Image (spheres, rainbow, N blue to C red):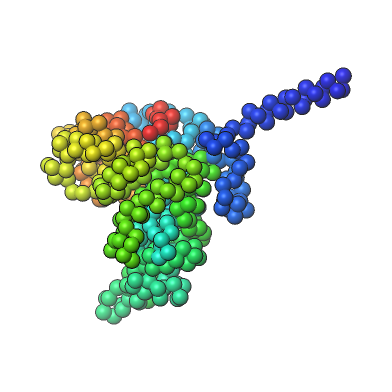
Length: 439
């Protein structure tokens, strides 16, 4: 009898183990750790289980609910107030713009983990290259002086294109600095710490120059800012159970770099990192503001080119918002267009937010669209700044972010929205039945 009981228990334990050893697309078990992530497990021990997308817990925090209460009365507010917040799921509709930089230093491990915790289904690594041509996550090739502590490290500050020069308060002359990823090696880059993207223009010391964070952001989570290479971001995102949208940043140095590293080499290298990591191309949305980069991927790496994203922030003209222009993009193989959100929105005669001609023509040409960026403008009481320039008269409180998201989702029909605080977009997507939407 005891033997039979033991055999039954062993069988049940075996079945239970099999049911919970859900493989990723490589067939690895859930305890598998990609090379390079072991060093992070002491700081982030729960990374070992996060690549199960369906099991990933979402922590919205109070912000989405605070925004709902700030909304004007109406049907959308009623709908969001009635939403159940106990069954929130990750969603590809919610894209972490540089992670969660409203409160965390952008493009850092800490920022990416926060965005994944808020339910972002896709995370962004903006890609730049170092002096030794290694790829790293930075928003621009020349932003190290505002996003890291480089100016406070004398031996690295000295290598900057423009080393730190203090301000002269007497004459009103501002401080100067410009530090590029291409000024330093990968090893030197990895010795830096990420910080909130800001600087103090009247700084007289390098330490003062690190200040200047906008008062609607915070330094609360700036004590750690772990910088990542592009390859490390791929490993991390796999463990977090999110997909990938790397942006090839337009170089500020002359290309070919040092005479033999061409733009095509750079674009090819970024895609090759995903090939070598065994990432399914269906999980990658490579981005660029340069149409030539997008067409390179379309023609040279077509499996990745199918989801290549053409970023657009050019001023609106009759030509670049026309159906003919949209159809020309489609004819060249571009499938996804990602404009600044203001280009897709306008106001009707009743001052209501509606899709713009640009958005309608893109839709008519069969292009999918992705919007950027919500929750980047700070408090919206004064109209929302650059990101809301075509709808300023309809923006007067922070809760209006949900009105913007709602029109982008339901009327424009975007397939995803970049956010500096993904919890808000995750909450909306779940409330409106978009949480299961894949790209």
